[in-house]
Length: 490
Image (cartoon, rainbow, N blue to C red; front, side, top):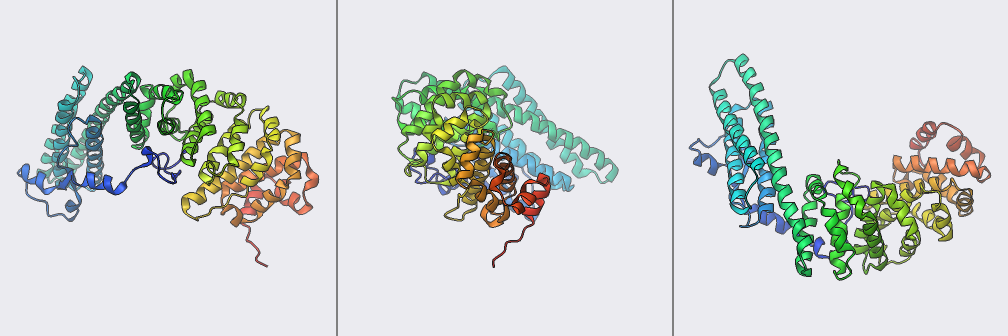
């Protein structure tokens, strides 16, 4: 996400201390749990009365030996879904290589997985809908069709005939994948909806806490689960948790984490978040309060990340934050090392400031709270550990600080204050010295734009050489000059 980019959403925000329940994810333990559910593909081959494959890559095949714990339909769907998706992808790869023996054996195994998922889910779930029953039937029919046609392909030697049959297999595999996706979507939506209803109906704090933790765990499974949570109005039930002070800080932080995941600007959907607007003011107010009262950096990070994502979602959120004196709250937090002591957290703060800076009235609040000086400090953000994640976070802080400065400098008072604080000198240094910006092109473009905006108000703050190279030419020419600039170590 901008606030939360990465493969699994919050991946770019390491959570120091790992003190909250939602952060206690033991990858080794997760691997051990998955491992005991897997066994080698030869077992399935024997069960199907097929000879064990002698191909080398057959040794890498894994199947689910047994389902997850009884009575846990969500985990069953996720585990079975992962295995079937993997099998579909592998079949497609082998089909492209015309390895028909492998395609057929894997098609047989896929049929077994699909049948197991349908029967196991039926055993642990409530009465399934008519729509689900129809899709289950279509899925199993396509599985049988795929197994039958791939078996016939094994007997064909004529390349022309085989080529035409390959097109048929490809179409069948594609349709099978569509049916599987529809079935999984329906089943997961049903289970997530049940989870949301459980939160809504619960009067027990401990039940609410554990169920909110389950929702957060689901967001870690990727964008499809986040979209489903949004679709079933999961964000609205979280609003009640965020605004209820009877819940512990950890539970409210967990709710904030789910909101941050679901509202990530990097997720390829927004249409299901329209109902979120109904409770946006309550959520924004509660999140800002959580930032203000946070007892640790982790809590502040999650609350500010949610706020940062919401400011991307709708500009109305920026207006609300302005009315709630969010600039003062955020700038005050920057001086509190207990809450703000990492570039990841400063990334969230400067994201909010950058998005709020599109509002004209934001400039006066920034000046009043000495915000220009804080932005100047963010232009000098440096990594302490040198890890790729921290370096990337520092680059984002520098880039967004420059963007914020450029937007705010529409106001002459902000521009003059920035010049007085030597912001122009720092921007020039970032442009001319690749090491200062970690050779980041994004930082360079943002700094050139900010420098040009300041120069339009206070041109006397520039030397002639800086003006001629960094301001006067086209932006692309200045960019090329600076991006190819070699540092002098004289």
